[in-house]
Length: 305
Image (cartoon, rainbow, N blue to C red; front, side, top):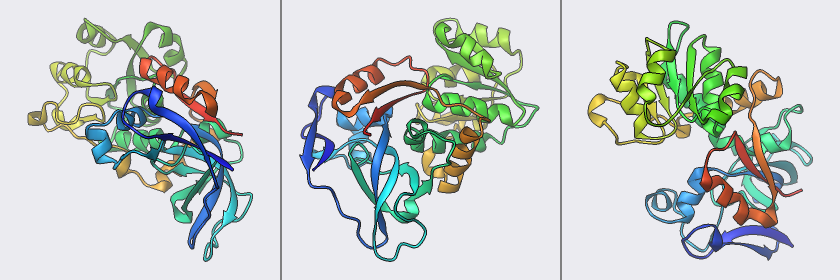
C-alpha cells in the first residue's frame, strides 16, 4: 500500500488527511518515482483553501496535494529510454507530489545532481524555476541595484543569490532575525514594515530594479524610489499598479533546463537553499500551519523515506 496526502473539502490544514491505497503504475512514456522528499509552497494552501488559486490550478476536491518532489525511479513505462530504475530525479506534479509514489511523464523530471541532497531537491521545483525566471526577466547587470522582497524565503533567497551572480547590488527585505544570514550571502538586509522607503533609500541611494515576492508594498516602495515600472517584476501582487507596466513573470516562464541550472548551482555550493524544517508525512497538517505563519528561512519539506 502507498500513502497519499488528500483533502476532500476546501479549508485549512485540518482538511488534510493521509489515504492508503494501491501504488500507481507507470504508463507508456512515464516513470514511477518513489518519493523521498516533498516540498511545501504557499500556493498549496491557497489551492487547499479554495478560491482563485483552486480555480486556476484545477484543485477540485477530493484530490491530492503539493507539487515539488524528489526521489528514485522504481518503475519505467514502455518507450522510456532516458531514465532507468534507481535514477534519482526531481521535479513537480501539482496535486500529486505528497505521496509515496508519483507517476510522471519521463520528460517532466530532471536528474538529481549526486551532490544535492533529497531535501533540497524535493523543495526546488517551484522556487527554482520562479527565481530563475524572475531574475532573468530584469536582465540585471553590475550597474544595477535591485530590491528583493522576502529575501530569506524560498523564492527570495534563491532570487537574491542569482541576482548577486549578475554582479548587481542586492537589497533584501526580511525580518531582523534573518539579517546576518542575508549578509553572509552578500545581500544588504533591510527590515520590512513601516518606514521601509527610508531604510531602502539609506541602504541604496539609487535603486534601479525590484523583484517582489511579498506583495504591493514592495512595488510601491520601488516606484517611490524612482524605479521604472518595466524594471519591476512581481509574483505576489499581479494586478497591482498595472498602469506602471509592471511585469508578472513567474515559474511558468522557466524551462526544465533552467531548473537543472539551479540544481547544479546548489550541488556545487555556488548558492544555498536553507531547509527551515523537515516534517514526517504524518505531520503534514503541522507543516502547513508552520508555513502559513510565515517568517521562514528557506523551505519546509515532508520526509517520506
